[in-house]
Length: 236
Length: 236
Image (cartoon, rainbow over all chains, first blue to last red; front, side, top):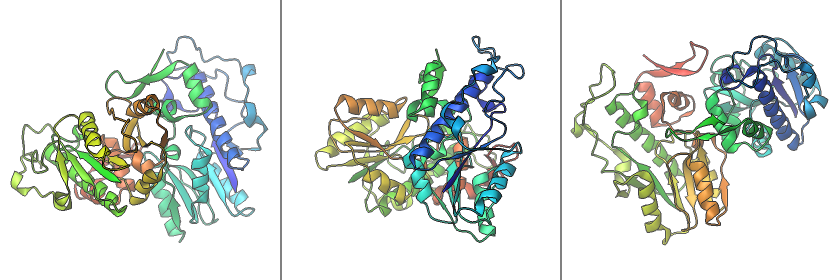
């Protein structure tokens, strides 16, 4: 199976501001990417990154930092950038929006292999076991639905399928498959359903994460807060 | 396995107001209960209801309706109440808060059987397959974590365990088990992780539900709304 991991370092995870500053969002999103890549590798597949720009771009303070975090000015020098283990992965640069970039990759790869997986880079709870369950699902198209109608990961086994990540993509992907006469199946996974977009999602990473993203949050002072009766995060 | 389904009909699902009126919340929560009971039955187990009051109590307009829904005054006559298929289930009435009621039931049942499952009544996406996966998990305690740190379903195989549903119960249940020297395992299920508490959760029911709760929402005019770029619900 050819596994693609799309990732953007152009102002990633903007909905995590606040509580995270721009440069913190860069670091945290890179930590999540590392966790996803590690989980894919443990399934026995070497992922290919699908990047909006080279990994070492976009990490400097390219613009005012809209966060009020006091000890982080957003002007982290670019020379500090270290992509770590993912730097050695094969990567394709495509600066088009996600849907066009993924469909371009499907067109390019589809003829060469019988199955292409697309796994989002913000699945900080992904485990090898959860990914193996997705990869084992039958159907021309296998979907790991995301909370809120999204498509967090999928496996495409027929070149007649194309993606459309805009809006309620889970429903759209079912429709696209149906119109092409393709069979769809899903995997029932909380870990793959949890993409990290909003501050509330950070609690899921603290509670259920096992890798760098959880460690990054802990090092940054985040912890679980239940003081108002609901579960959220606070920062010390 | 003895399967308990706790359910309250005393102002259930208050966080769904708005968009649902008080009597609508009663109907909708009962629809979810039916779906959960159906899913449990299909696994081959006849559930026992753990009720805060008899099922036919609490359905009348017992207080002002805080919802602004025009065509529903909250004064639905009690005589219309029909609990349907769940009315024939064995039921225990315990008006204590959830934690005390479940621990009371565990004390009562624990000596008679080797495993007690507690499945929340608002798991509108629960399927027999997801429940079978939970029931098959090993460990003295098997947990289906809920979004936001909750415990949506669990299986208890050792009388040394007790529940505490207040706050981040997933973390607390792990701690309680650890302190009693018990092994904990989890099931990775989006369907069991999705309890329906807030308006945003209604989108999950519309997208992934298969039973009465989804049908109830559709009949009440709810649909998926993606007009602002995110996935929510609207009502016609």
